[in-house]
Image 1 (cartoon, one colour):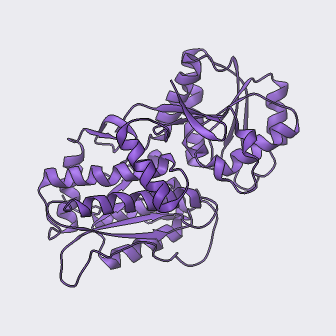
Image 2 (image 1 turned 30 degrees about the horizontal axis):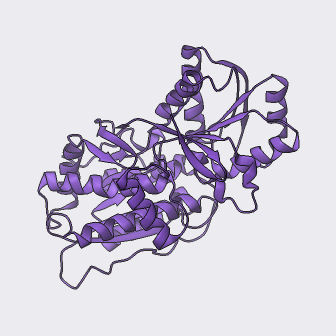
Image 3 (image 1 turned 180 degrees about the vertical axis):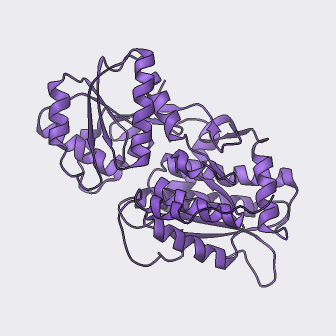
Length: 394
């Protein structure tokens, strides 16, 4: 497959969609302990925020990848070769993510599992596309990360899918009769989920009585948006944004005595870990997610147990997606019968074909498959927050 040119303007455009930040690229937070001088290993890189406001996402992804890498190495590696893993912090910033990518490229990265957030991932996808490095993102859900990039695949639901299945779930389970929506109009993740939710809501007969936006420059006071939803009689609020803003919305709704059902998507995963947040206010909040840590299957319980033992805390869906990602790569590499001696382009081309023939059963879904656009097909799950933890619901 020939290398194709991609405008550098995409990187600049996507920088505006990432979380605000500045400074140098973060330090390596990984292990290369299996690597010895002259020994061939699979070099898998990871990028995500391990510091900053979205650190819960990146830390979960890094930790989960490390668990999977250790398991695979202990079992003999991939096609007889061990994995070296190198993770870089990008603070969820597009330019820092490109810097992290360049650091990993200098290290000799062959495959990237990342990045974690959509704005950063879109910028890096342009780089991996030009360099023909295969990219599998655990949690970047915007369609912008895969559009025009045949080498980038998603493990999480894309934004359109999240919006659609959320509307279907709310309607199927009669969770609300009048729907209010608050979304971040400056964020492609939030806007994308909202737009498809609104379309599907009309198809399934949900009545949207208020739609209120905010931007990245104004995300600390939601009293106006909440009051308009309350005045419109909304008994369910659909909140397609991140857990930091979610904690503020829940706090301010409580202060004004407004108690609708709250329904978030995957960005709400992390709500219970927000510093100084009264987690009792999260009781009854719904999240649409592909992973429930309280699931009783052996694979989930093993993963959760290892995660808690090694890193403390309960793994979120981003961690579970990342863990699945390493095993998906393993299965695709084994099907391709490749060794680390192959060039990055040879590995990339082989994995593009192989992953579309993979049917994977993992922590975040059964019979997962991928299309040529890089989108995953799998069934969503829903959880509700009860007694300070996530509880699976049908």
